[in-house]
Length: 240
Image (cartoon, rainbow, N blue to C red; front, top):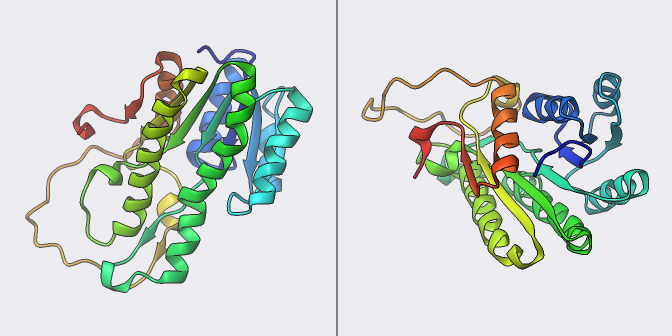
């Protein structure tokens, strides 16, 4: 699918990967719907993006998610692409994972994308096509101390994505999962951290590539849509 003139919902669009993706898709001629909690940041971004729509959205609130899709359809008449990007990190040892915090992150990182998918799938089926892109994480492919909570949710999102891809083939709805590497955004600053820091024994130390720019990841998202690739990795060495 080419994105020119397509209606694209981007969640978590107020910063980082979401903002870079919204800008890239707008440059390619898409009609971009900007979703995030920060109305001020979205409105500032929208000033530079023609044919954009601001919809303040809490992706842990089912009514907000329903309203996001409804307002998109009211404004543009359809939804061609959904990019589930909103999310938050959570670092804690397994023995110290907080039920309340884990549930909070679950609602944003996993349940929110699933609910958004459920809102757009009937529309895309009626249209006869559509694309859903779910942003997972490179941590879903690794075993890293203190990151089991976050990584497990991102791994679950990847599995749901690939399963939905099979289920929706007959409807010509494509589902794609993207695995970013460390990205130069405020994600780490906003990560919830609980419990003690891991004690590294040096056995897994190796030189890793520098962090990617959010623009780099946005290009990867675009590549996945254009090529209809089920899984997009930020780097080849991340492939399973």
